[in-house]
Image (cartoon, rainbow, N blue to C red; front, top):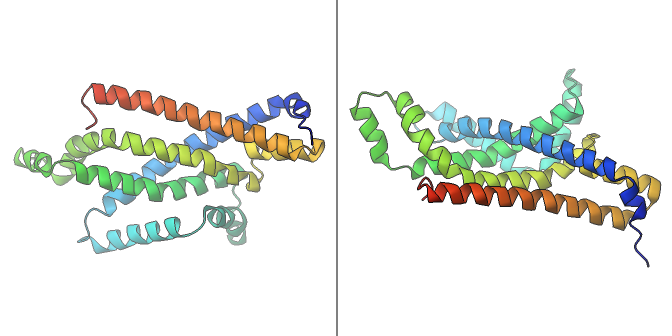
Length: 222
């Protein structure tokens, strides 16, 4: 068998456009996941607020305990039964964002708990409320510590985003399948698609290493 990549490279613009969509979906989903994860992570810090704690724990249990593909299908195929028709792109971003939020919440909770308790006590002794202490003292320090694990989550999301192609979103995987339907060169297309995903994840990892190195040089990451 001889590999022939010429039909694939003839449609390189389709793959490039798909890669751009993949980056857009992943970035939007991570932004949503960070917002949700921050709320869920803070909600799980205090078990004494039972209603909030139980809700956040249930959220974590569902989104970490069920397959991402099933969750995406719930938003895309399930919501229309209630008369709620969302665009495929919105379903993909929401699905990935909610899924990512469960993992980001544990990153948030761990980062906040890693901040020395004395910081909070000092803030309270200065007359700050619990909310002010969290917003002005604890969270800023925790955010810096979240950057490395959040980078890993971003890389994982790039790879997981391949599933949104099943929602007819024209991402990298979807465009690759369109090329296969015309050229019948499955192996070549999937090898090129895999290479593009590798470039995306490697570039992201490289940028994150530079950011982390600068933070460590500045003494912001322990």
